[in-house]
Image (tube, rainbow, N blue to C red; front, top):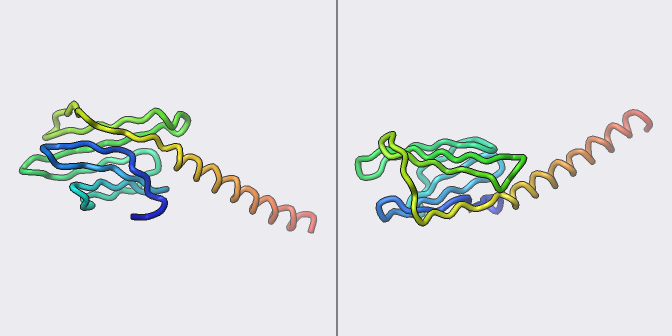
Length: 119
């Protein structure tokens, strides 16, 4: 697992452990420890998988302005599921990493612009 991958959610479907992870630009879904879906997306992602003859749709969305606000919606055969014992984790670590990367990138651009204009 990558250093920049953060667990966002964990829940069970029919005694199978489903985990949602994300990195800077991708979301991943693991079923019983095995990766079953991978999608590009910074704040939102949608994943489809089949389990025991049923089709599941998992939609995860975040709010960049309010990183604590997030939603996880799961549908089984197009019918919404009410998950019990689900854990949805905050994305504060990723937000901090994005802010640090943005400040560093801004610094580098500023130094180069200063050198180009007055150097």
